[in-house]
Length: 148
Image (tube, rainbow, N blue to C red; front, side, top):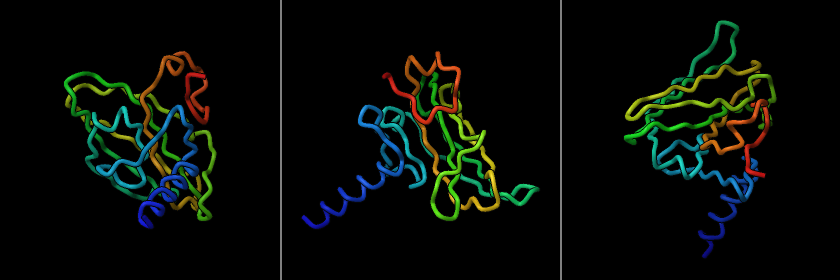
């Protein structure tokens, strides 16, 4: 019972920090690293391949994450890499936007990002399946995409 309560508390805190709404739940799947929050409708269709960390010429951290579409049909997904400062707060910048990607069957795709400042020391990757309003939206800097 104690383990169940601790697990439930952990999931609640995780969802609060990821800004998840009930309509668009994002889960942390066991087959993905803990820094990847992935929509359950996408999680079964992709596999995590690799992550490479580095440092840019300006001294900021950078990351490259590779995933693969394991289905036999083209998938469209949206991703966003959110950098956090050393206090754990998400740093909003012009690069804090959703990127829509078409991934062919059995093909890999890469997500790359460079930290906005030298004080950015951590990141989260969010992956969602776009809905009908996402295709019409002109402002990809919205914090969430929902059918509201």
